Image (cartoon, rainbow, N blue to C red):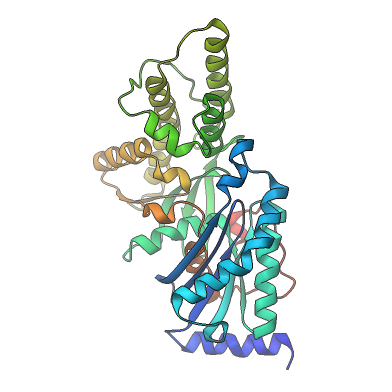
Length: 355
């Protein structure tokens, strides 16, 4: 029996069995992750290996090192997820894997490993959009959340406002024209010397700071009211820090971090609220690593109280890259008939409307 026939039979079994298990793999950047799910929203196990210590001395992700680390760790991470779930590959009914967007070398490790498992076991293979996975993290936290809704996706690689029309139909309503908000956090934190990745250190540093002390720019994209730009904010921050260092002046670091957090939040929150108003769903979700930022969460909560929108925030463990979110979205892709063949490829960039 060839692979296509085996996968077709596996697909039929998976469709009939509500308790069937799915194995998900994520390797888009600097986390090697695997997860076992029963159905779309029951996470049986999670395993994540982070490369942060490997990249910390460089102040950012080195793609070649990331790919090599994924090669070294993907097998043991998958084995750990299976062991935690108390199952073997013989108990798995389908494989979901991130196919893009992300670092293409890193993605290829997960895609290749997933294809190998699918071929060896004759299992259906599902390619998952990484951004769609981040959105699906909200389903794991909120069992009652269903499309349609608007989602603000904010991470180190992506900043976008997405119209989630159904579990598999999505469209970007607005996004950054240059740098992602998370990348801006990382670069500013690196220049300050407070650690990598920069989101959590900047968040902590802002405690007790005066968010009005430093006036930082907020970009406006004429003719595209939902689009954003963070390159100007990043440049302004770097110039401010370097000028102070050259003059021997001391920055009020808590106030600087608070002013920075306010500038980022005031670039994101009003646009997310405007998108929600335009769509009229009454539901706004947030996704991605920057969704853990306390200032952004607080501002969104305040804005939604005023507008009457219901706000959905993912659990902190689902904000960063993980495979549980990939498995969740993979299940819905599977229900929509979007399975892949052994020709599944990795994509550095990928429009979410294409899946």
